[in-house]
Image (cartoon, rainbow, N blue to C red; front, side, top):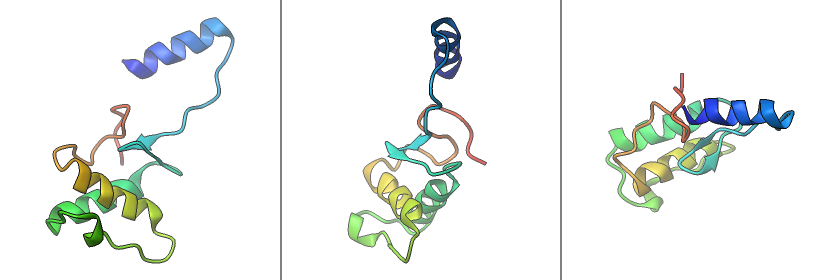
Length: 87
């Protein structure tokens, strides 16, 4: 519903720049699937602190997703911050 309201406002105002998707307030570079994967990994491994989140190579979105789990383990990984499905 929120996205519809923003889209309607953009039409009335004559256009808006596309908003980036976010997962746990971290900006997604694409479809938030990396963040969701990190969240699910942390959930499966019962990670309870930031030090338990692996940062390997350029997997920053995976790491951030793990951090989101540590910060909010009840959030879930199926939707971005706007409530849109993550595939």
